[in-house]
Amino acid sequence: MRYEPPLQDIQFILHEVLNAPACLQSLPTFAEVDADLMHQVLDEAGKFVGEVIAPLNRSGDEVGCQFANGQVTTPPGFKAAYQAFWQAGWPALACAVEDGGQGLPGLLEAVLYEMLSAANHGWTMAPGLLHGAYECVKHHASDELKTRYLGKIATGEWLATMCLTEPQAGSDLGLVRTKAQPQADGSCRLSGTKIFISGGEHDLTDNIVHLVLARLPDAPPGPKGLSLFLSPKFMPDGARNPVHCERIEEKMGLHGSATCVMRFDEATGWIVGEPGRGLNAMFVMMNAARLHVGLQGIGLLDAAWQKADAYAKERRQMRAPVRGTSAAEADLIVEHPAMRRILDTQRAWIDGGRVLAYKTALELDVIKHHPNSKRKAEAERWCSLVTPVLKAAWTAQAFNGASDCLQVFGGHGYVREWGIEQIVRDSRVAMIYEGTNEIQAIDLLVRKVLPDGGAGLTALLQQLSDDLVCSEVADKAFQTQVTVLCDLTRQLVAASALDRQLPYWVADDYLHAVAMTLLAWAWSQIRPAVPADVQGSDAARWLLPAAALQLWILPGFAMRVQIVADRLP
Image: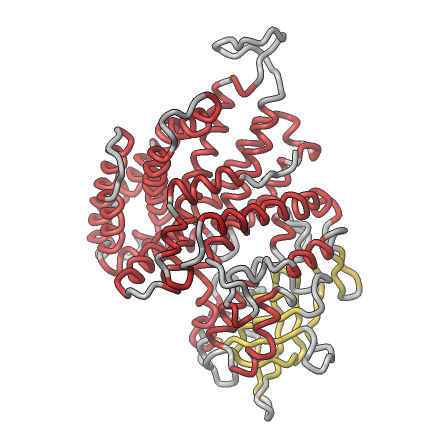
């Protein structure tokens, strides 16, 4: 079974739960973005993803990218699909009109990339960095560089990379050694080796724009000595820049994406932003990039669930505890509680995750376009606190939940025929890149929560509690979670002042406690949006995941809280 974009579910979250059209129309820039326009864009996006990108997923995994003589050949169909993608204007969806974009909300781009990741994660790695590169060049590059490169990046005619990691410098970019030697013409010569570069070499586009972290002469050690440079595969005069792909990695998954070792042999580059402030230029795209990785988690989990759900509705094994109506010798495994628990638990994470991720995308649009500074500050608080939670918790659930979905297939899941094992392999990397999940947890607790004594998180949670639209038992449980989490946060703030290692020990459990609290809030928004007269399978579609949330997910909140509490002095 191939992934099918779940447009009905997506539209329900956008329109009935979040009222996204009204939120967007409150921004002057998007005054004309109504429900009909959103529906039209996403409907066309769903068709493209389902008809063009999804069919390439299996062959992309089995054939993979091929490397020979410094050249990378992508799997069959990948190049034609990408050409169709950029020529149809999909990379330019949320880019400014003056840069060749369509000027639509980032929310629509976020939904597009959720579907793309679910359909074909390997292929999606190619355009996945375009938006970040676009924002980086737009906000930090010189006018000359923008004139030459911004439009090509915005439209997706040329793809881009972020060349950060080196063999000795992964999460600790302060250890980067690549050198930049200034030249008389204002350019620099870049020398060094970068690893794990997604799309460092390929045949999808005529040029590749590399954004490279390097050190100018006499730069101080550590992250403050890093500058950012733009170094293209082909120079403006058509000459080949000495940027070489030495090999591509043989990976656990993502075989359709070339992960390259890149060597810069005095390659020409031009500085982007100010000297010594390369990380500042790069971090302009960090919230959006981490949101998109969280959306990868949601999309991949949905793809796994779709396969498992379809299989469970066809496969018959034994009799269910409460016998079904079938006259066959065995019941469908979807009727067995053990399988229902797995399937409904994943749906609770998927639907709740969509609420949080789409709201985060909305808040990013508010940050960019809302005229009121107070409203922007609220949006910045939401994105600062929720983005690391989305990235870490939902990528972890993508991998673990996909593994659970494989369990639904039994032995059939462990062989390639059904495709579920590919999702397990492909999803694992999302827990690592764009800042490992451990770094996300430290970012949340050490850098976001503790510095203001927990005031920001407490205010956010209290606002969510005050804004509940109904008073069901489940929502009262959410309010109890808020009380417990806020009290734990206050204790943690006090204890961390006495023990500097403490927050690092408990950060992961703390982040997951926050994730479960946000998940409970998301479902408090979903439930009242489900029509009261919904019946049959439509009712089960929303009521069973809500029950799974209460029975199987939220008890984990108490466990995570207790783990943190046990570390307190």
